[in-house]
Image (tube, rainbow, N blue to C red):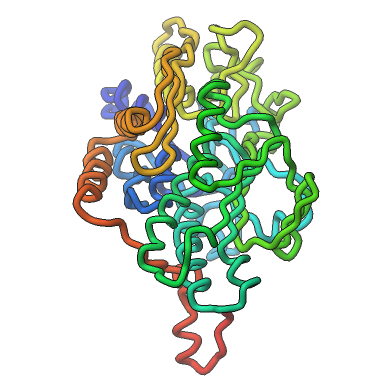
Length: 430
């Protein structure tokens, strides 16, 4: 979206004259600003305010809602499955191109752990964030309505696997929300909730450095959150959690955030791929050995010119900046001018750990607590696309200063036909 937005601005005259056309192919009709997902899950930000409608932003582009199934650079065409393909016999279409940008992003990197596919959930989409918010609140509803100790303990056990930004922020925000919600559940105690983070490495949040990572571990443990380092998830069959340290218990909630991998679509074609499944890219964001094919973001192995022999990290900080450079390079190619390489030194990282709690390491300056939380919000507010979304997020935060966040679980969103099935005489599944 950012690349298309840059092209739309830089090629305004050519688009007006009909000399060029820009098509964005994506299964969804919106772009998600992922750094705000933890706040959306915790109810601090309205979920619709962390997504940007493509058609509203890309007014001069064609938005094609479709899933790419094959990339054929030799013939300069894509094979796609349109969003409404099932209505016409699930037929595939082809899209021809002159210049191609492959920015499919990443998906969760999973392992063949028994039970993970059946009961786990990721944390990369707004749908997952909404589901987890409703699910956590639903567990409080269920636990407060039953007396059987084992069932209550299972409902109130929440396990997160992965100590990166996604796992730590999601865990911290949801725990903060659940602890706040307990004020309205007089028969539940905070000590009954069990929140756990499992990490295979010996530290969490490596992006903020060892010192801030250790501080985060201590801060979370003081909140009663269990942090298990150098520990692996061995099994999750029937929601029975088995860890590598020998501990076993039941948990109704298992969130998997243990890393990402390039979107599998990049392998469906003739693009050059490295041993990690990433597209081989140059510093100018072109694909190695291919003319007029470009790439950026999580699915690309972009050389880091500030650290010889390394590649840029798969995060929003690099992806957004690469998109800006990429759109400029494409325009340079169209106008016969030289391209420029992507160069950006990593400035640091910020992370939110719940309301008024955060950690940051920016330009080597280490900050924690309220100031880090404020820096986290300020930075991401400056990066979220469009003035419309900036205003709406700001309004959400402002209202939160005067009113408590909602604690209503809209679990029926996952089962919208349940009430109608009951009306028709069919026994709905619970």
